[in-house]
Length: 298
Image (tube, rainbow, N blue to C red):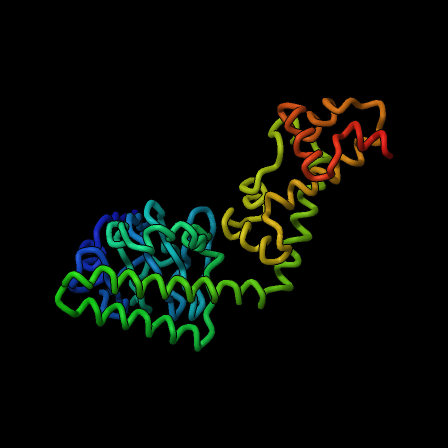
């Protein structure tokens, strides 16, 4: 039977990994100090940044599997669960990690902006693959935070630790931008698949049964997390995924408008709108004229 662990506090996770707790709300870990273990299911109520240096089993994160390669960075946020599968034999964990409790950043500048770091809700298959220099920079920042943890806690501790975590996350933001660029060929394929998915959607009965296609629906169909998918489309096109979908809706609508036997209301329902006025409002906003005015002009 698979083991399952719940980590609500830093001390619980430190104990699991054979680490001393220097601060109740944050810890930097060297996983080589942990005892050997088998695969297990882990539920987190903590923020985690894991740097894996070797293959350590297949990670199941949500409904996706990811085979770790050396030098990958994975982010976990409270409420998420990960499985380390295909490891019935004991193995020695290797790598480094930063874990912190949400209470650590309450009232700090990081607490106000943490939701902007979308990679905390990416799938494990969308992990950040680091270059040698990037990996060393991450380890240096882990070390800076760890050095601060070795000091006696004082009125400056929280601010300094939170500032260093924020600096780390800002670098990770930059590294992800680099990854989107270096994987440009793969991303172009995603755009083509996105376009094909939308074309198929509007040729099907799905607009009647589901309604308008959402970003979350498209991301799931293309096997991405919604945030990663949105960030990827934005980097590639300069448009949000929602804007991309709306552009496709307008493109399909224009073709339908040339069929004079259809009313604007019928077209709206065929596209997946619940209310024709919502379609008319979007069309006018994007095109500059109402559907009927567009039909008359053309």
